Amino acid sequence: MPELPEVETVKRGLLKLIVGKKIQIASSDTARSFPNAPADVQQFLVNASITDVRRRAKVLLIDLSTDYTLVIHLKMTGQLVFVDVRSRFGAGHPNDSLVGTLPDKSTRVIIKFTDDSHLYFNDQRKFGWVRLMPTIEVPNIDFMKRVGPEPLEPDFTAAEFAERFKRRARTTIKAAILDQSVIAGVGNIYADESLWGAKIHPARLVGTITNAEFKKLYTEVRAVMNLSIEKGGSTNRNYVNAEGKKGSYMDFARVFRREGLACPRCGTEIIKIRVAGRGTHICPKEQTL
Image (cartoon, rainbow, N blue to C red; front, top):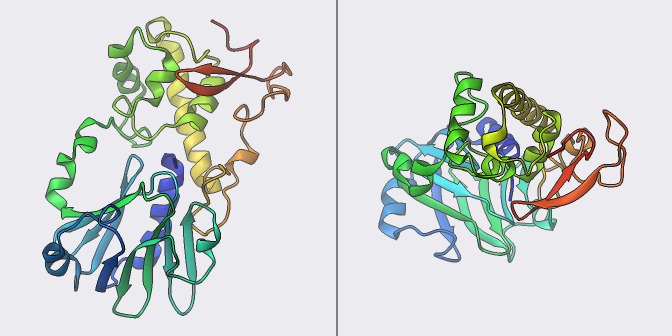
């Protein structure tokens, strides 16, 4: 599943391309991918204009002039591909649908704009979805009510970061940082990278983490995610960035998927262990229990 930096990269790409466009028609091949009443689509999506593209955690939000929003979750194999006569923009699972003729057998939703450009939602495994709902109701989605604060917001402080973890005192720090109700959008790659940067073993209990260590972890989370956004996301096997190219963050990864290689700080061989049910990469010399 894409992590926050990848979804942020998609958001920034779409923001440049579709804001101001008017929707002529929308269609779908399955209700699972597009769970919307036809009457709502006709009244609130057709003839609406795109007013904004936002992100909350790993979810994309496309706001409409009708005060409705398209809530989009790419899940594991989702893609968004924008096509007009001058350009092509692709983001998501890196199969041939990003560059091939569309629609194809993986296309689930087609949005045609009045200028004859198109936005395609492709999804091989049909886990993702595009949901139309009143903008005012978006914060009331169960996920939105549960999800924690955005770690990259300017007003999200180190003290607030540490406070979010206190209710997880007997949980491993790796499990807690992956918990979307604690903070939003951090997945396995950036958890490993941040914990390595802060020299914290992923299996340590939250209650053993000092305030100084939390402050360092806060700094590392923000640094690695901002770098990933700058580089266009990770080169994870099922993700490309907002220009349809693989992101370059993994070229700068210090520990993730580097087992058997030397720690860039001390030279110790990086190992892979299992914490919180996830493959986890650490330097055994600098990240100790």
